[in-house]
Image (cartoon, rainbow, N blue to C red; front, top):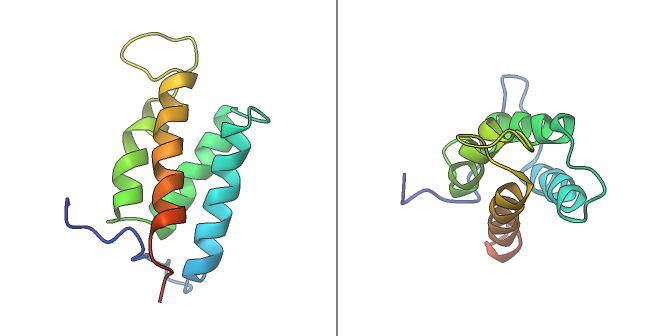
Length: 103
């Protein structure tokens, strides 16, 4: 999906959130992890839920999908640790910030 639009959002059957709300919510969760306030599995699971609900088939999903599914701090290979997760989160955050506003 290399030609994916990072701003095209998929909504659930009830209409989902607006693109701007989804982007803001995801950015807030990413910021929470990147600031070391909370890197719990619960926050990462929440990020995964937003990704699969509102960002499926986007570049943001591609950047974070493996990271959120493989995040297990201290578990070693083949899982992702906190540093690897932070790298993926920072890349996704950049896409959220730098991309054009949703339509």
